[in-house]
Image 1 (cartoon, rainbow, N blue to C red):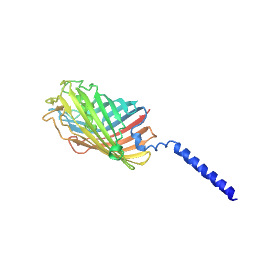
Image 2: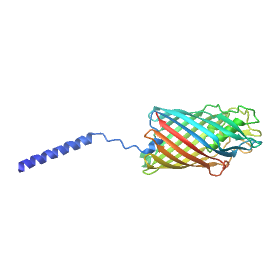
Image 3: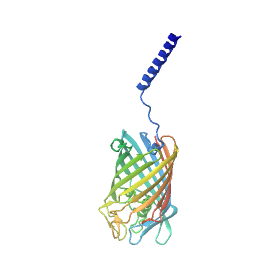
Image 4: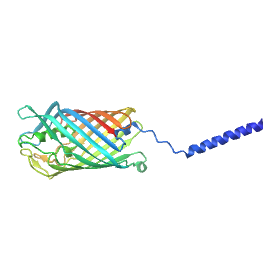
Length: 316
């Protein structure tokens, strides 16, 4: 019996050794994908769109039309874009905006206005993992955008309908995309984002530096002056948590600081504009995301502005 037991024990040990050796040779499995990754689809092609509706009460650089206003539900902004991955860490794409709103006239009535913003072409370098330098996972991206200068005033100079419509679109987004909504300029923007994912939340910090190069002074508002180069840096701070893999809750804030307004009355520099932007996110699988957000002006020049948006992003 002792010889039999010894042979059995030897066979068992040999099987264990062989199993361990085979397991060691197998490549490690890829870590389970976080639901937060759904925010930026990893597919080679991606597309996104959003519809924002709100109310606007914001300053306008004109001696005769000092404010731009649109009633609740009458300020509407449609955004859409697409991107393609041309290298493992490089994407190129384009996005555009269309504003259609009821614009208040001097006598108090409202007139329907619609205008295209400047379409933007961009290239983005992403996936820069800095974890080895700081001892914690930190990702980032860097983007360069250039606009197609199509935004302009089409009607009579005294009406300023297109310019005021575009000003409504800019106010809805808290002035964080002046390169889109400023007429008669060549917009160039450099942007970057730092992304810190943790076990229970993720922290995102973004900064954009747009330069608005003046192309023409045609149809500028009555009594206004122009800057050869406008400069309105803006940033965003956002914290997001995912209680479930399909549901995310996010709280963020944007700040735009007009250091050099492209069009102004008395001073190129005006007060900063901050917006509070809570958001709910729905991850629909690994490559699709829907979100609902609210943007409310936290005081500042556009303190009467608030909006809500439904957005969708999908990898193709």
